[in-house]
Image (spheres, rainbow, N blue to C red):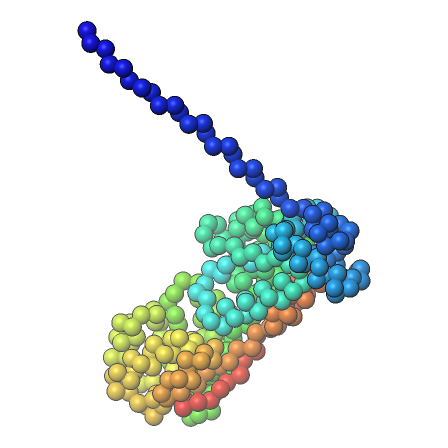
Length: 349
């Protein structure tokens, strides 16, 4: 039997593991900056109780940046007795540019007060059940947009360590600070404006998108309140945010006999205005149109869109409310009415 010699190559030795770089510590930052660890802590935690010169602050920040040092949030929370996390659950309703700007302003203001803002997604449970999921993150404060949270949810959050629960919506919740956003005033302003312009047969667009009922119903009611006791009539106009739906409504517009419409907001106004113009309906001669939110695009339309400008609280004011509640958690919850409305009369009405 023939034999075949096979040479088995030597298996190369596995490469030596690359030594992992140790995680930089505050002691490393202190050595590089030539200061004490306490000074590093004061500077990076923005402690205002201790006066530290600007050159020293700059050296500490430069050393931390060079080493890639980031303060340990959990350790800082243990020292402070609470976290610096402010949780903002994502709204369950469609968010427009106005709310997005407000949220961005708020995040910046909270950041300047050394809070970390975390947005929580909308998937999963809602209301009081959602509060249990929020509580697991142990936030120091929770800002809840819209409605749905109840007293039980507030209690769950507070038992988990939340020092402040703030709601932004149409109602007061026991145990929570309330920023009341009464959307009646938006509809009331629009209805009064149209009546003062001589309009008597007024339609009100009511969106069909889920989550908007908390805003559309009060706006419709506000229009009705503004016209109560007058010779004007109000017609509710359900409308999905779809071009086809707007076209169908516009096709039967003349049969409705309306001479004005409040479109809920500027986005619905643009949708409906274009459909009405496609049907040959002259704006404002045959039908006056007014929206809400004062979006830039409304000023670019022809005719330029009349609108109700909403006046929301500043991010700074809300951030200061959160900070005040965190520092003094035993105080009585505050209630503030924060939604104002001003009509901007333009060509469409």
